[in-house]
Amino acid sequence: MELAINKTGLEGQIEVPSDKSISHRSIMFGAIAQGKTTIKNFLRGDDCLSTLKAFQDLGVKIEDDGTTIIVHGTGFSGIKQAKQAIDVGNSGTTIRLIMGILAGRPFATELFGDHSIAKRPMNRVMLPINQMGATCSGHDGTEFPPLTVCGTEQLQPIHYQMPVASAQVKSAILFAALQAQGESTIIEKERTRDHTEDMIRQFGGEITVSGKEIRIKGPQKLTGQEVYVPGDISSAAFFLVAGLIIPNSKITLTNVGLNPTRTGILDVIEQMGGKLTIQETGNKQNKAGTITVETSTLKGIEISGEIIPRLIDELPIIALLATQAQGKTIIRDAEELKVKETNRIDAVANELAKMGANIEPTEDGLIIHGKTNLHEAQVTSYGDHRIGMMLQIAALLVKSGTVELEKAEAISVSYPAFFEDLNKLYQ
Ligand code: SPQ
Image (cartoon, helix red, strand yellow):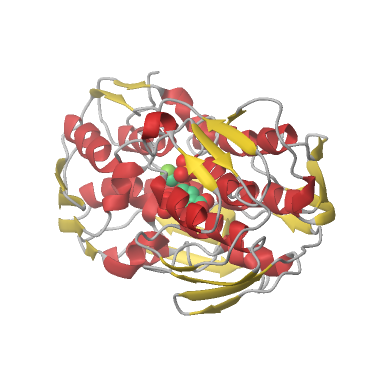
């Protein structure tokens, strides 16, 4: 697809799409709780629709009138053996979190996905849930999907020191721990997004979090709730960066979820000298706000350590931001980027370099020297939604020629209306 280029003066207001992480979890919690869960503002991106379909395949009654989703949960025992293998599409969150739920169900389930899912590491979830008593195995003795999960109603609790900072692994263990006989303890490597912990509380469960240590007793019964999904800061990130780097721009983003485990990008923008204002609009339980950004003079910084999980999905677009900052930006401790929908360290470095950026991949991140002009190129998303959207924002800086994006369709995984929303800013 040919991307829009050479834009200045982006102006306007966008309501960013609903949070992908919370949308997945709202279906999952609705399915394992007793009673009705009503979900408003659910993200209708491909990934979350894969979760919805997966739970229908597992025997859960889910109604969708196009606006509101109603999940009729009957507890963990309402999760029944599927008639066929479950297709998770491109969604790492779906496959990893479902494994934790299936760990406590007494039957075998086969899980598979697309070409990218077939390369995503699963030992990180299989090892702890197997330690709890499930039997999970990957394709041909590997850790990779297609996977088989054989669950048991006799799950044991676990004391687990996490070797990776991963909200997906933590969440899978929490779902298994909710079904285990006794107290489990999870110690995070770094604190990661805590939507699962929040929703356990929202659905009437008990969980104790103290720094990086989480304690949870099983078995627990949860109760259906009303869930309103806030906007996704990971989707807002593309327009935050556009507003900062495109000349003469001012963009306002409404209803952006501001859970502190997700807001690392806002800290980075402030440290780089970006002009940003935040007006909080949500409540204590569901922090949200309106964010306005303006074209800014930016400087390079170092991004490393505990902030990385708070902005892991924003690193591709932060790398673009760094190409427009004066001086050197170093991103470290982000080796997890290599095992996302694609190797995001290589993908970002290759594609931005094709457009003229001065960017080097490293073992655990990127080094970017700015400020550079970007020029026309033929680029690819590698089938990764976040790489595709980052490249469209980069193309807006290109003065002449064409920027052709391969595999643009991947963007519908998390932001089906991305191009329509972008169009609104220059009409
Ligand atoms: O679902 P998927 O494909 O893994 O989604 C990604 C993304 O960019 O949308 C990662 F590729 O986000 C993950 C995120 O990186 C969503 C997520 C979650 O909802 O729990 C947690 C993070 O992954 P991880 O591996 O660090 O736990």
